[in-house]
Length: 379
Image (cartoon, rainbow, N blue to C red; front, side):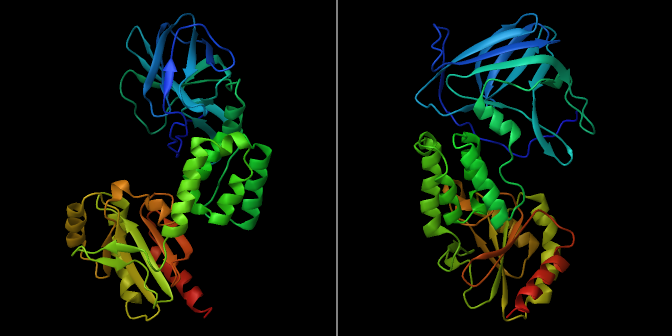
């Protein structure tokens, strides 16, 4: 089975764990048992979803175990392993799922466990034969050939997709609603909703939140989603959204006098963003005299100096703005996108997104022009 690197980088659901070797309380502790043939003797580390080391033990004859005592948070958490044998070979773990990606099997670099779970990691430990990727010497990627058992939270994450595609149609929303109702206890779904919140209207997101059980709805993760929704409903891109220009003057992102606004999100450090600028210049030449269309670029650079330097180098002849204090701003709660750049939003005169394009596209001029002309023809 080939390795497919996860596109998602998920945050840890539980930020504080107290790991102790005291007597085990089976009602709240998480027990992890490993029985992996072909795993050499050595030291194995338990890591959280951000690769922070939480605990360590020794593997003997492929066997190891951990007992995790929850701290002040009781939400499910993400875990993984790192193994170091006597010859300094380092093994990073991946885990099989039943999900597919691009026609192949999807591997994830973590598993999810909850208080009271008894996780069993067993089978034969296999090595990935990477293609077109050269790993550092003495580093290898490995995976158990059997699926992990022992957690209903992990079962959902390893078997169910939440969102596929960038447009939430009515039919897709009904499918998602049905999944949340079927797994109302799923913190994985809650996380995915938070991660992809920009793809949902406020009404859709609130409707999905209502499908979770009371325990999930009372969780810190759910409170984060609701806080974002409340913020977004007042700050989401609209005619009143302001960003700063070169002179630190606040200017509207949306021109209410134009039927269509082309909002380009970019940064000086983003290679694909810089690569598409010549194409955007070509698009601007075709549209600059059109009274119903306006282009504006919005930089998400952390430092204004970096933005100004790149902006001077690129000499883009349309309006240029910058998100001030980007480090403390939830950009994806203002601009409805998933955080990836370059992203181009084509909006109406109120800021409602009519089309979203993410990533570099060599045919963007014809593609954008075709969509814009189709909208204007409807007038």
